[in-house]
Image (cartoon, rainbow, N blue to C red):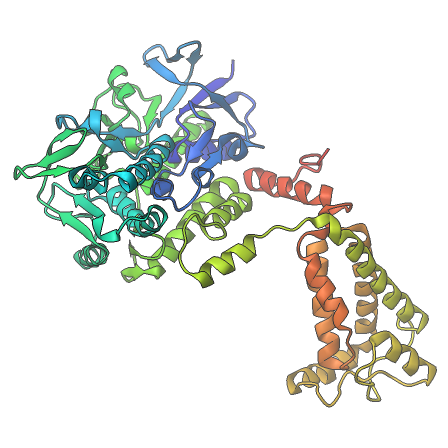
Length: 601
């Protein structure tokens, strides 16, 4: 029987572990790797506030697990594990039993309520995609009811929105509310001054793990936009229409979102392993549990204490690095190699306060605030998505974050976004594509007949500005003359290039031009690599314009139209582009290619 490794949970740590195990053990037929999760998608938890705050659609934080694991050794099973017998090496769901030889426990965390009366029953949480969608729906419902409510007291309750917890989640969610509320006010005819936004924190400051300067900038930005920040104000009681803080002050509201802390998944209590604070599993230097060396805990589930006695915080970087370390150590055990101690290296944090302002504290980099911090956060997200799913996931992220917007910002921004994301019906580009290829074919054949492959044609007399390249070629050949690549309007830098590089090698460049023109003809007629051909077609005509002054603007404008993917309809690109996409996906997972993968049927 092959040795079975089970990864429990497809969060940040679980996917990183799966990817690492595949890379280390893909050639071992005596090893089976299984990833189990109750959902069929991985959720980008750090961006849930964008769903709750109406910035992006739910699909923007979902990544298909099967997509990530395609072309890998890892098998995905969608199931919910409810119990485990670690001593007997078995996991249990309601319908199945899963034996294992090694287990990576990465089920993630859940909200911690700290015994606050009424908090679990009456507050919203933001720890899953369903939570985010529930909050989004609830906020709209409050505005809808407030629009027709005449009782001032009830209206105030409806339009007061409180977030409990001034950590990353709470601040980022409040940043989304800052931007969304004005749009909701316009939509429902409500005065912005009626809206009350509260950020409530039990500690003396919000965002306690970042630099004081960045904390002050974050506070200043939120207060400037109408947020009331209450520190040293632990919440003591929550009812369906109010909450109270330690000072005794009561705040009437129908909306309290709890982001005040997390704890390890409650299934940990059934495992019989040593636990630390907030149910987290105590692990050794190799991320192994104390009781069972074949069971590893990672991410939010583990309590790892460094040499200085500090406990590693539950961050995305922690999850990624611990998942990688656990997988490497299991692979080392199977391969008979030495295990590596977990040596976490945290590079910093980034917090977005809406879509246009943020703060970032990164190792070795000056502190950042404003839009620059937002750009850095996007780049970090793209780096992560490229690591698990390649360019496809990066493009999906860019589409959701930058090319699609649920909000209204200003006319210019909305106009640009709306034009960029507009899609065309490519079928109607087919006749233009074929005709463009036909024109390039005529131009290439004319050069063949004019002796471009065998005779010197470039260099000598001045060309005739305003004519077409084909006309000038025929005229020059008929008169026994040469086509000059330098004319009165040629820039000096290009003239230098022509005299230094092209003229001494004119036969080479003649043949290259001929090959390119015939290649463009084939590309457009057959619809193969149409996007690249369009760029080359534009470049060729710009080259003609810079050199001889001979041009045909029609080629340029028709080539721009081809950038819309004209070859994907009635062309080879319809089959080739999906195949290349799968080849890229396969290469990323296996550092190789497989010609039979990814063909469109």
